[in-house]
Each structure stands twice: as structure tokens, then as C-alpha cells.
Image (cartoon, helix red, strand yellow):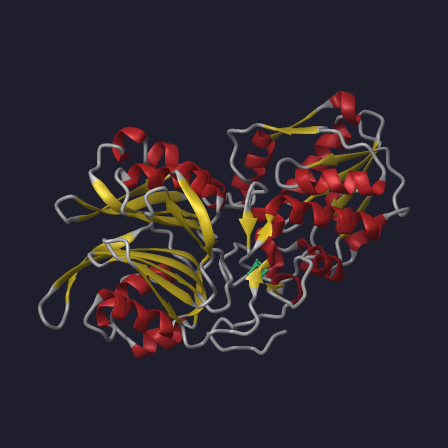
Length: 461
Ligand code: SF4
């Protein structure tokens, strides 16, 4: 999971792009970068390891004279690139014409072996994102847009892409719609793109609509838009339900749903499933990702909610921190307990999900050491039992506590020293998503993968 942003036709485009990336920092902080075409028509890339405020400071971005820019916050997933994005550069086509292109990618491709066999000797690394950039020059078509359309027609898996070239800015979203991508504009009609709507607030833009699954939107330098569709458009989408549970901000609209009320629905459904089953005094949410759902959960279950855990706001998100020891250190640095709230109390500790259990285990110990009488863990998601192959970092099943403990809630509670552990059911999650027809991927919860790693459709429901 990463955050991508693009803009064309607006003065100070690199500055606005960096602001959009700043708003999407929660989607990845391994590295970040921008690519732009300047007033002399030269494509340049600037990227580095770390957060947007450090890699793309205002002094740097506002000094660049450019009206078209794209950028990315990288969150490295298994099999994906560790290299900062964007990927960009020049190439000569068969007619000897020079092109310059940059690309940013959110998601993870499937079927790379098939592509490697079909187009051998064109890769400098094992990264899926670099494959996109490496293959583009070899695609059919005279124009960059034609080459992009040829290329994305061959890709399988999860990809929300933005390309910048001498022809303009091009957005692509895969036919399953795994990762979000939204279209916006600024007051003078300039085109903006972003992973999440809230980026437009800091880019001085307005939300228009989502880029449809399987849609390609090209905006020329003159601001004219053209629309295309991939031939393998799906009737049924498999958007990532985990985006709602953990990643997307509540001040947002995601997959056509308002983030805040969707998270509240998770809390309401969890409370309905749990009512009368736990004797507790107070609900303590894990801030910030469980706070909104917990407000509705506490109200529905009839308990007070108190902030018995506080987080340091300069700490990063622990799930997207790489390496187990780094994650443990990050949890310690990130949270503190409020003893007055928890001492002598039977607590429901509410969290969005339980993946590896690193955070929960440490928090339960902190709460018990701080005087909590009992700690019952309630999750606003079902058991996470399978790895994600579409861009969320759950590389091996053995790392997933629900898989290791065979979805036995008592064993899971014992493992993390909780007095009980309760999950939202998949049915409860589907109800919370208020689906008229199933629009979501649940593969990490039920193993029903819509596309296999080798790129084959599995016929999953
Ligand atoms: Fe999202 Fe899970 Fe599907 Fe991955 S497997 S796309 S995390 S729902």
C-alpha cells in the first residue's frame, strides 16, 4: 500500500504534489519522491528515504518551475520494490524519437513470471513496479498513451498507476479496483489525482469522482481529458476491504463510502455481535485507527469510552513499520497509558485488527502493569488468516496470529495475555459495508483470492 498523487496544468505543481503526499503520509513512509517536467521541458526525479517533510521540504519544491508533477509515498510490500518512486527517464522509440516518462504505482502485480517470459532480458531488478517502467518502451503504439494502454492491458493484479509524459498525465486503475484512485480539479479546471480524497484538501483541489475500476483517464497539457477502458473490466469488483478497516483516514471518502460512518458501522456491528457477552467497565480504544469505530461501539454496547491509551503524534504507524524488532520499539515509543482511567477497571481494549499481534501484546502488558483488572480485546475485523498478495504487507501466513492459533480465540487470548479475544465476523463486516452486491476482496480473511499470484483468475467469490 502506497500513496500516489498527480497534477497537471497548475503553477507550482511540485509544491502542491508534496502537500498531497503529506496528506497521504499514513499510506507509507519508507520513502517518497516526485517527478516533474519543468519549463524547459525536462523530466526530473527527486526522491529519497524517509518522510515527505524531510525529503520534499517546501524550499525545494517551491523553487521548481513546473506545471505537471506526480509523486508517491512508498510502503514496501513483499515482492515489491524497495527503490523510492517515481521511476522515470528517457527512451528512444523505433523511429528514433525521444520520449520522457515517469510512473508511480500503488498496489502489487501478479503474473510477473508470465511477463518475464514474454519480454525477457528487460529487467534490472525483481521489483514489480520497475517492470512497468521497463516494459513501456517495448509496447505497441506510436504515442506514449498508446504504449500505456498496451502495457496495462497485459498487467494483472493490483495497480493504481499515474504516468507523466510529454503528452500529459495518465491515470490507470486495475479492473478489480483493489486500490483506490480519485480524480479532482482545482479552481481553474486543472486535473488532480490522488489515492485518497483528503489529499485534495492540501492540494487546493476538489473531489470529482473515483477513477473507475478498469478506467484510463488521460489529461493533455492543454487540459483536455480522454477516457478509455480496459477490455477485461469486471462485473464484480474486489476492492480491498482492509483499506476501510485500517488504512484510509476517516475524514475521507473511499470506494464511494464516507470513511467516518463506515468505521462507525464496524463498531456498531461488533457491539451487536458482542452484547451481553463481556462484563466490562470501560472501552479503551487503540488510537488513532480504532477511535472512530470505538465511539460507535461504546455507544451501542452501553459502556463509557475513555482514552486510557494516548499516542505520541510524531510516532509512525506500527503496522507499516518494517521488521519485528522495529515494530516492537515503535509500539513502545508510540503509546502511553493513562493510569487514572485504567486502574482497577475491567477494560475492553478495542482495535481495528490483529495481524501479527505485536501491538496488542505490548499494549495489554502495559495496561495490566498499569493496574487494569482485566483486558478483553475486541477487533473490528475478522481473523486475518491469509497473506495479502495485492499490496498489503502480510508476507507469510506463519506471521499471522489467527493462522498460527487456528482461529481459536482462547488460544489467541492466551498468547497475548488477554482475558478474552473477540473478532467481528465476516458476515458482520459485510453488513457494515452495506453491500447490495459484493464489491470487496476478503482474501486475507477467507483465502478467497480473486487473482492468483501467477495472474490467473481463480473464480473466487
Ligand atoms: Fe485487502 Fe486483504 Fe484483499 Fe489484500 S487480501 S486486498 S489486504 S482485503
